[in-house]
Image 1 (spheres, rainbow, N blue to C red):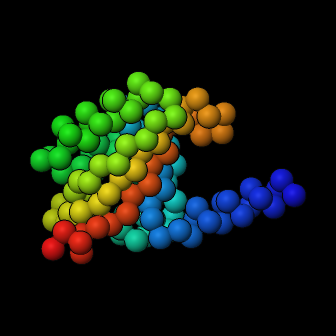
Image 2: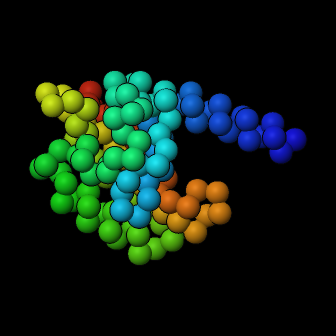
Length: 123
């Protein structure tokens, strides 16, 4: 039963229509789901091991970093931040990022990040 639950969780994460990632305490991306990357048009090799903040538009970076820094102080806390995501040198998308501090979680050991595009709602 435990294995089937784990497989179900993995299936959901890989097929959800949002980008799911895990960041370390410095913002380095240690995991990203394939479907989410495909939705944003970003190859896995372009994000894995890179710093999440490198994908934030320069006009939003200080606000996102400040929220992330606050999040790190409180295990179990969450924060939602709307910002622009740089998916290529010429393309930015408005997204809503939900960060959850799961550093103390024995399975995650990091920041769980869920990103959904909100570009259409910004127009």
